[in-house]
Structures are given as C-alpha cells and as structure tokens.
Length: 183
Image (cartoon, rainbow, N blue to C red):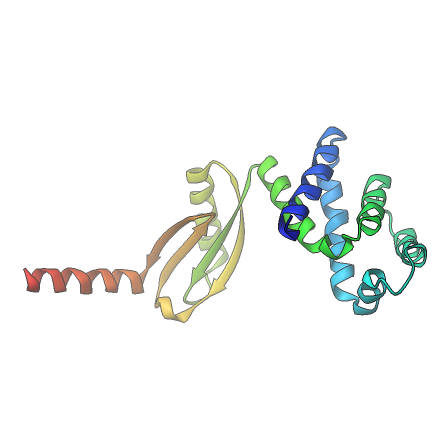
C-alpha cells in the first residue's frame, strides 16, 4: 500500500476518534504542531526515524519531546503508534489528510486567489463573501500574485476555477477575432 494511502488511513482513524470525543479540532492543532516540530528539527527527525537506534531509544526520545507539550493522551498514543509501526516519517502527510477531514466536517473550503497586484482588504472581504455565498461554505484564502494575468482575479476552489483575469479576456477576444476572420 502506498504511503499516501496509509497516511490517509491513519488520518481517518484518528479523525474518527476525534469526532467521537468532539476533539477533532484540538487533535488537528496538536498534529500540526508536532508536524511543524518534526519538519523544522532535522536532528530529531533523523534520530527518530533512524533504525540504527533501537525502538526503545527512539521511544524515549519521542516521550521526552511529548513531555514538553500539552498534547492530549490520544495524540501522544497515536504518535507512539506511528513510531511503533515505523510510520512516524509520514506525520506530515497524515496531518495534511487530517486537516482536509476537519475542514470538510467544518464546512470550510480553501480558495486560492491569484491577482496581478495586491488587493485591498475590503476587496478581499468582498470576494470571500461572494464565494462563501456561492459555495455555501466558509472560505479560507490563500493569496498569490502573478503579474502575467495583467489584472482581474483568478479563484481556484477545489477543482473549480473562476477566471476573471484580463489575460483570459484578451485571449478570448483574440480567438473571437480569429474565428470571425477565418469564417
């Protein structure tokens, strides 16, 4: 089974327990915190995943890190299980899957907004409000700038793209002119 599928399976299992305990958002924060620590600390990451160290020593290391946190017992046990099953290196992928599950349950969609230049906050708020109404979901923005779109806005939500860029409009006009002169 691929790491991606395994990560999804572990995330679903923890999420199910989190929903039962009505703590899935808390578990998300804890997973994200641990995943960030794992990503940012190369020495810890190398030691915790290196089979040259005994599982007993790696568990002691994990326990020492977890003792400095206020993580729930369930998340601590979950991280211990990942270590036991030699899956701790999948913590970032598991966290991504888990975050998607919590967003779906919380009715949150992620929107990537691409603009040629920075937008004013009021404009961003208007865009969010419009798409929240259209999608019937709370929208979390991820803003990117791309001067190649010339002007306007491109919004990507899931597999749907709303392209209101000047560049696309110009390309549409070009195609229109080509068709009218060829026919």
